[in-house]
Length: 273
View 1: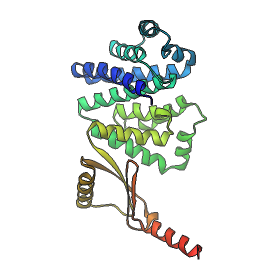
View 2: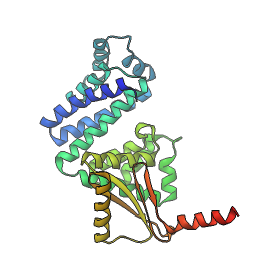
View 3: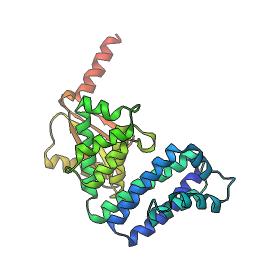
């Protein structure tokens, strides 16, 4: 994203966080849902998003245009956030869409932080991702980018209805539209990491052949926290196919000490002789 785009997002974030300090979790949730709706509206209206990000138009004109369009459709907080965003400068119209979506997620995470369910939402998003990965038919249905995202979101809502926090359902459904242009799977991972970041933690994706006991998890989390200089939350997947050892990924860092990797390296070495 361009420097001007990042500055514009910060202006919208300041409006959102000022409202968050005084607003309730319910108000923030409403704002987040409305900002997601605005995001999807902008995606469907290329001429509008060009007009709202056109640096040749005065900021007052851009704000006036968007306020007229969304008047009565969204609440005051969402309207003020969108107004702050369109007053900014953007490297491209798509940056405006991405900035609106980013603050929609931020609003939803602020809401669950306020009501004390942030850790639950983070864990539920991760577990839902693992559930999808373990069901090839479901993974294909939700990952099919050529199909209607509204239909895929409706499927997610049916699967999670009554089984997860409302914010988990909303965020998982939003992943069907591709957060920041990502795939469904990558969108879920991004949301897990965003939820962890909202708790000032990093995420370590850990793959083991058999479950770690509680002591093992604590020790690994403590070691990784020392390495990264901040708390690290573990997201553990059990995969017998790795045979033994452990694989750990934090951001772009990958440590692969699995038996399956060493066997692959041995086979490649033998094949190269």
